[in-house]
Amino acid sequence: MAETPASLPPCHGLIAAWRLGEVPKPLDPQEVAAMAAAGAAPIWLHFDLVDARARHFLLALPALPPAARAALVEVEEATRIDVSGDALFGCLPDIHFDADAAAAPPIGLLHFALTARLLVTARRHPLRGVHQALLAPQVATPAEALGSASRHAMLEFAHVIALLGRQMAQIEDQLLRPGGVPPRDTLAPLRREALRLSRHLDPLAEALEDLAEDLEEGQFVPMAPLLAPLLVESRRVRAAVRGLAAVLERGRIAQDQTASRAAEETNRRLLVLSVISAAMLPASLVAGIFGMNVGGLPWLEHSGGFVLALALIGTSVAGVLVALRLGRML
Image (cartoon, rainbow, N blue to C red; front, side, top):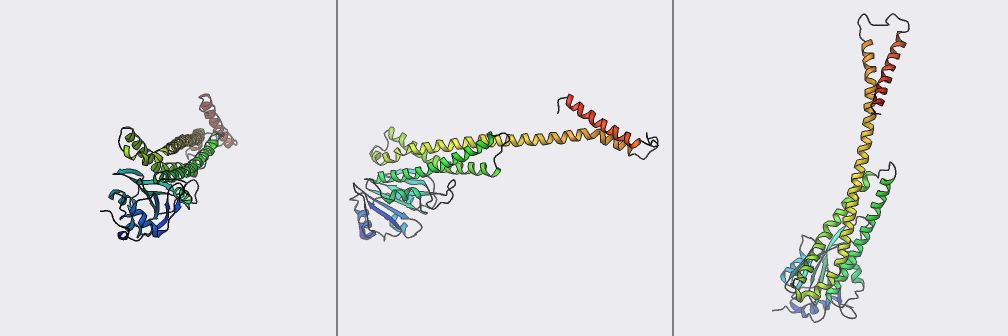
């Protein structure tokens, strides 16, 4: 038996509530319980999960199946979209509202549960996409409201991915300059950020593709109106995934090029050291021979013996350098 408004817990943690239609209208918290229980008009409820009391209201919503209610308050968060009965639920990625780092913003998840007459969203941290969608929702149905939140979130992700692409272009420009090597602390963080974004957006793209395929095969046909606004945004999701894949591939190529430049520089320095060692080897031998404290050494009594020894050392060094040159090792 459906619960009456009186049996619902107090509506704690409510951030925003809208009655959707041709002219969306904000709702007072006192109206939310009655409208959520009645299900007579399409509404969008947005909750703050930091308020632990919100879970009591969410778990008691009669219009949602148990799996959808549990998804709204679950602690383990992962990007996913599931179907249970006549409800669509899961978690969508979004960017923290107060993120300072433009190229590496923290990513949060928007919990959602959707039916034909009700959209419930919840988050643990303020999020940009859903915030933009809630400012003045120009939508008539809960499904369109979820599509709007997803669209604003993907636009935020598109800005971040575009910035990553510009940063990667700067690194590539540095690599194209003769002798240019980008700073070591720029490429690795950029690739790490692209991978972090991919871990959130790739599952979303896969989930939307699976839903589209299931719909084409005749599954979830009654839920087509709920799925349509979200599937429309799959184009933006695929574009974001392709953009991240391009950044990752360009980053891999830049990393290989940087490693190649570093290996060439190391080899050049080792060649210089090898040439110096080879050139000084005969000189060391001559100096070692004349340093022996034995009789019979040449030029011991000669007044110019020191000069002759130096000349012999210089000649041996020059001979080694000439031999290396003729062997095309220099």
